[in-house]
Length: 442
Ligand SMILES: [Zn+2]
Picture 1 (tube, rainbow, N blue to C red):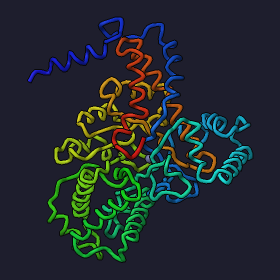
Picture 2 (tube, rainbow, N blue to C red):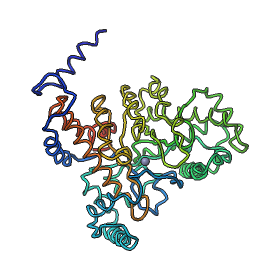
Picture 3 (tube, rainbow, N blue to C red):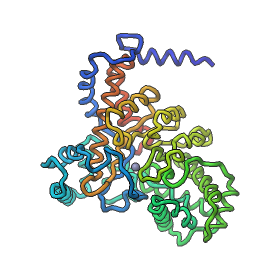
Picture 4 (spheres, rainbow, N blue to C red):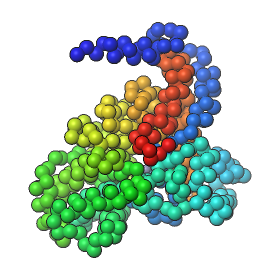
């Protein structure tokens, strides 16, 4: 086994067309010019948005969970002046502040357009931002989203919480908000599958889980999503089926399992769901970054806790998309994509970080496994003023600027030429993600 030929092949490939043979540690004086040249070309690339929650603020189906009260990072606060720029760009907002009476103008403008445009309202937002198609990661799809432009990703977490959840939800204020919504989601899957109550035996429960995945896929879902890091540690053990069945059959109709018993059951179900994701060609999206709410446990939700799963050859046929790129552990996260079936999505990162900082994260990714990174906005209707519309704008604008800046440095430092840089831009904004859903998205 001699790795040298591959290595030399890569170096030759990267340097072909460049005027020099070795990369330099500093950009040249041409950096700004290259950036100015790249940005308009990047703006012309039609985007595939790999992760977002389109919808109106009064729509409870936008997510399978709700935001608990908690601190917001600087750029996420509604005092962010960039939101005024977003409203100007999207709606011609005529004011330079968001005073309550001015904000009222915006709320009324959106209501008027919504009435006028019906199910094209959000498609028109995509048009303004050159987003060709986008994921709608929602509890259920909405009739006001055009299925030609929005593809559904549903939530699979609730299958892990079928028992009495009193202790689970008493853990802290965030879980008090989240866990009842998992109960609600599981109940909706039961209604969908015509179950009055959960089956008494474990095999029938697994059959119910599989049927739900298959039916969701028939309804157009392209992937399943987990936000499990919000509810429990993401280190999953490897129990036997008999161990999980024992917990299920003892607690399905009442009683509270011990924490260890509940985790054993969940570990098995999680692995069952991702294995089914491989069998059904239903990729698995996993929230892998720090989360909202003041109780999100960073060390227990660290993306590296999932390394045993991602590098397990038993799941080679499952495609994993690690949402939000493991942030703030994005430097480690990119190395997980060495596995052929593991990808990153940068949604939320480009909004939590300003472009000047996100540029560094993106550059490190582009220099490591550029074919494994994808773009998403994580657009979400925070409230009536700061809607999914404005968050689409902020995600897209930020990512384009950071991408142009990262690539301009790479060109100026002799790492890639301009044609190669634009190819990387196409990959990140569109091609890498679209290739994961053959025949289903474009
Ligand atoms: Zn999200």
